Length: 438
Image (cartoon, rainbow, N blue to C red; front, side, top):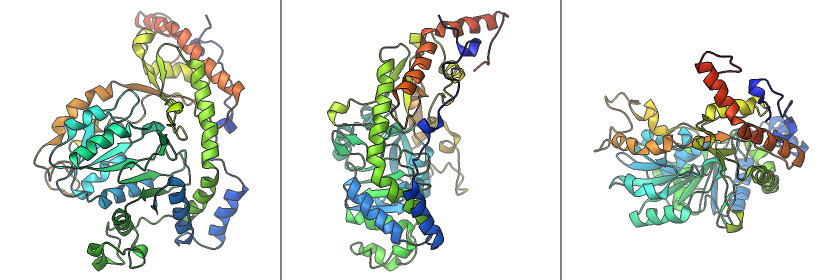
């Protein structure tokens, strides 16, 4: 037995290597592109952004791409594009970032929450429960890079005539059975902010093959491009030229567009190295109790994109009931400072979706225009609250020595986890106590 560092032992990792985790990778090419914007005061133009849109659409394999100031605005434009409106419902997995669906209230629509499965992904088997005559769209989220079961989800959507929006904020460039994520639904949107695997400052992107959706998305937040050069087929939009129809400017800052153009050149190659490192890490932990990898079998043609914010599943019953918080505290003590539990909270549990009244209408905005109280469906999402996850090192480079060392830290905590249970028992009985209560 090795004494755990949380209980006074020696940590496996004394100092974490910054270069192994630094992201994005910035070179002189990035800096030159950024300084061109600065020197020439091109922040608020569209020339660099339009070049990025063409390159991004070609890379994505879609006809159209539209850049926005952030991912939330891109997702909002996608909702406008599919015609989400007053009294409609949009289905979204409960475990995701709030920007996937919170803005539905701006359209007078209701969010309906679907359960996740043990890959933290939308459970297609729970979709039928969520559908009503008011359902307009499904918001699919490829959470933490794991590709959703798009065959099953699209089958449900087609059966009920529902629009599908893909939120690809965690999985840019990822594949499902050989096809790019973001090309299955009617429209897709994503964040390219500085913490994502595709990181370009603060930026969003919308992609689609459908011209009417492209024009509606463009008109929603791009007043300078809401004109005859861009809006050609949507006759209902033409009377409103030159005003952003969403009442807000979503134009991208071209400093971010310039960075994105450079990052796009090297993104696939860098993601391939990330996947090699992450798979090697999980291979070293295969078969250990209490944890499971969240990853795909790449032989199927699917992959985990840039493995954004890498996570694992936690099974406390296999570690004698050790809590995931205590498990992560022990990992931090062993030198992995990024060990935290939980991911995003389940949205159906937040007061925003229970009582918030945006427009002072005397009723929660989530349900004010609906003839049913969709909050009654939230109880069925309790199984999602019980699925536990934790962060693992998000390697940006393949370095076997360091991968071995981090795997050793995990193995040490798991093999010696009963020390934590004994220490907890001592504390309860008034004996000697080490570390914190987390």
